[in-house]
Length: 638
Image (cartoon, rainbow, N blue to C red; front, side):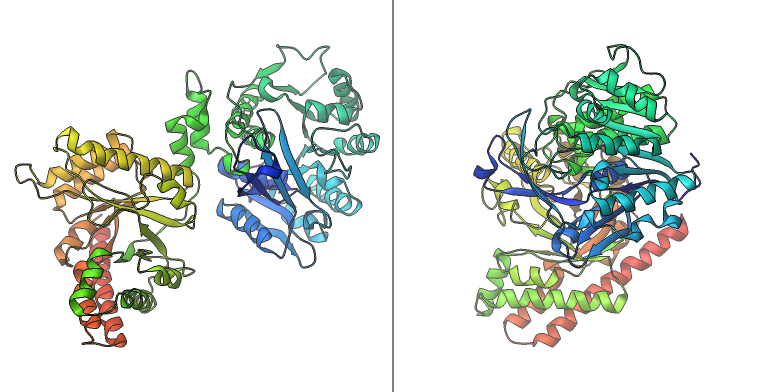
């Protein structure tokens, strides 16, 4: 299989929206909330292959609806080429609702009548596009209706004409093949058996569960079914055996499928077996394309299936290459991968994430200080919301004037800044919101320890910001509450999927404790030591030697850290220049220290809206210019 192709894998198959009941053990009728995920075997396999670092393209069809756009954006976000995911103007994206009743069974309801993914047209068999792949993966459901069978068969034929290796995931389910009342498990179907037998000769690799292979071979005896298939195709046949592992038959069919022919699986506590087969196939294909021996590719595939099985969702549970390597390297792989701290961290930070350039961020999340400003100015409290909206407008104008697209953001509270948050949304900005009670020390979180329930209502792309005043030399009893609260917050963001910005302030009191350049480094190290790895740090201005120490610490302890943002302490140009020389510092805040004077003047009626916007914009542009010059100087020096 030549590597000189645009794509390692082109996946042709179902692309749907899955809604998973969040209440484990409940009937679908009793579920009260659902989580939205990418679904469909074809899309899940594409997603899983991309997670493992393969170059992937998807051929599918979705409806012109929110579900279809979610499918396309999710695949594209993982790096998949979606140029051949067509949009159907008449049909809806297929939907599946799933509930996890227990370890062995699922409740599911499919909504596939007149669905888009079976209405493929000739664009799905674009020969020039298919020729760009090393391998084409087709799922069996695409051959279950006359139209999709014709188009899918044509795609396979054209791919083979150009030396593209072909893979069939049987993907059989009674309801998927048009048999009502049999959504769970397999139903003997002579028509499906005959059709599958007419297909297998076109494929180099055929993969299915024990039941699917038996169905394709037309026998309840696995060995006999394999012999029938071997008579029809020289393809390598892989039998997925669930927790037991898999069997790979790439030559003559043995008399028995016993322990000597089975690659054992991994002992994990299952949470959701739905989608584990898609993860298995992604791992198998990655190993196959990498030239691994079948034994090694099968072991990797078993590991991917186990990791997906041990988590709630399907596609979203797919492991990254870093997770897979960590799991396989463990002397004893964890039985609860979902509860293993290192695997959980790798699953959180190693998938593809949006990258940001140097960030110019406006910080307008002050609440108690804003209230006091309004009181002193004699302004009604409602004016604070307008003030924050005007600051967003100023930041947007600075973005436009300095071509800072993709490098602007805002930190906004929802006490006074709810309308400002909405005004900032949809601009492609980095956005964060605070969760700490203003001025609290020891730290208190808004909403108390039930912070997780609060984050459910937040958009996933909003960063959770928490300011904490912490000194590494404080007595243990004084640090304990701080660290307990931070640990609870960190666990909450891991569960919710939000990123965390931790603003770390080393307090000046008590004066008996040191507060030199090394103190903040030791404070960051302390939080790493107790297992807290924020995605972003917010740190105060520091001398060059402190920034170098921060750079070294983050590189050693958290190479996945998104970066450090410089907190605003009055706009000292020297502080910006020192921070810009840092490898880990990726931007700066323009905040209360710089915006207090124009805000106070506006609240007092001394300046109008236009003057406020102009002053705030000028401050943002001046800081951005200093930062850009300092960054340019650093680049020239290196």
